[in-house]
Structure formats: C-alpha cells, structure tokens
Image 1: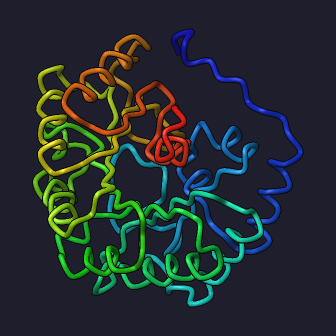
Image 2: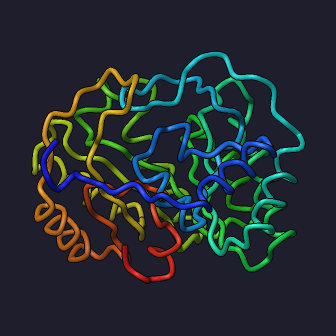
Length: 281
C-alpha cells in the first residue's frame, strides 16, 4: 500500500454503541457488509448507510465483498425499524441501498418505497438518497423509487465501459446510463452516480465515462480508489495518486457537475450528506 492510503481508525465509544444498537435491532448497513474502510470513521460521526432487502445478492460483481447466492424473504418490519433508527439517531441525511434482487418482480423497488416513506413519516426533515440497482431497466421500478419521496436518485456506474463485461458481467453500461437518464427525464434534479479507478482504465476511458454521465443529467458524482476487500477476486491494478483525484474532480466540475467528491477513500455513500449540503468532502 502506498503511503497516502494510511488511515487512522477512530477509537470511540460511540462506534460500539451504534454498532450494538443496529445489531440488536437487526438493521444491516452497507458499511459493514461491503467491508468499507470508512466504516469506523462514519460510525464515529453517526453516519449510517442502510442496506435493505437482506445481505445476499443475486449478481456477481468481482469487486464486491457482499456475498452472492439465493436471498431470503423480504422482512416486512424492516421499514419501521429503519425509520425508528433514523429518528432515534437524529440523522439529517440517509442513504438507503440494497443488494440486487433479480428474484423479485420489481427488483425490490416497492420495498425501497416502503422504507423511504417510513423514514419521511418518522423524520420529515431527513434527506433521503435511494442508491439503487439497475432494476433490469424497468422504468416502472424507477418510477416507484421516484414517487416514494426520495430526495436523491443514485445509481453507480462503478467502472468504465470496457471493464463492464469483466467486472460487472450481469450489468450493462448503457442500461445503467439509461436508468440515470430516465430519472432526469422525470424531472429529478438530484441525480448521483459514482465510479472507481485503479482497475486498469485509461484516461481517455475516464473522460468518456465523465461525458456519458454528464449527458444523462447526473449532478452529483463520487470518484474513489478500488481497494480489494477480503474475499474479492479482483486485484488492484494501480494505486492512483491523490493529485490525480484532484485533477479528476476539477475536470468533472469543468464539465458542469454540481458537486464532486474525489479521493482515494471516497465511496458513493461516504459523507454523502456533506456532499449534498455543500460542506465539502
């Protein structure tokens, strides 16, 4: 690991308290399931990204630490538990995301809607971001998300076009762009996406991805370094220097993106509220 990837892990009693509360209430987070390197930092500051629809994915992306397989049944009490957590923790900004559920007719969109509506009812001032899969391109499922009251529609591109077949074999580059474009066509002003670098992509391919994303109407963007989690079958090809992340942010801003977070430890949900409220990441 290069020197700039050193990270001090916070030792704070609130981390244990928050982890204990979530565990005792059977609430999953993407922070722990994806083995995110920022989990301790975010937990110490009271930032949580909820993972709904279980923790078993029906797809098989090489970079992801979340397990694949046959998911269990939807928990009908999950919306109420998450809404209760949002209210108790006094969260101002919430990311709601999920594993991909191709086994469900709507991909889980109706459950997303139930969770977001429950959060809005319990804590009306909380800003909610729905970080969703591609729903196999179903506009009806995307409509369900947009009609739920979610403040931010988010779908990650993850990698440049050339690497989709290798790294995200069950996803489609054009399909993901179409999901963002459709959300924009519905009048959604807060559209977010993110991608990783360090996987062998070329600068020209990053430029193409930035241009394609901007043309969808995407307004918020995250760019981060791929770091191999335990259990991943995908190796890091290159550790990108911090100054290049700064240059990528400047390039994206010049293209017209509203807000951009770019750095080695940036993830799509990392300090998402700060990005949304313009406090800097």
